[in-house]
Image (cartoon, rainbow, N blue to C red):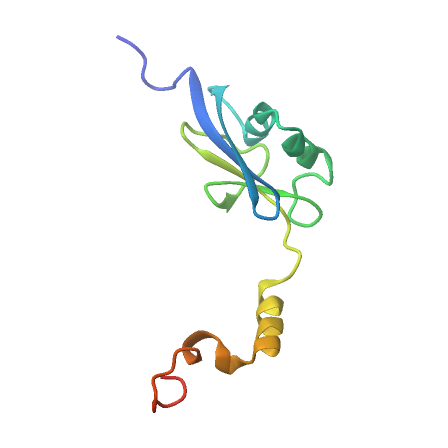
Length: 124
């Protein structure tokens, strides 16, 4: 009988956002006890390797990494068919960007108020 407890290798998808509106994706095969760091190194892309080198993988100074949309450390264990993601830091806080957009456009031309029925009340 074959031991089905642990596979000899796992397949992981690595996705990195290397620039604005630019993502890259790799499918890599790793030896069974693999970590997030192993998957990033196996991608072999110079941009991803540079992300590992500069500022580390922290939410404060550099890039952040995660598994299936949840942040994880570089030593986190991976399972078969996991999706490893590399996130760039935000340049503008989304709340601040929304306030600035509303100040430029005016609240009456966005959201619910953009498509008001003729003769309808404001906000409906």
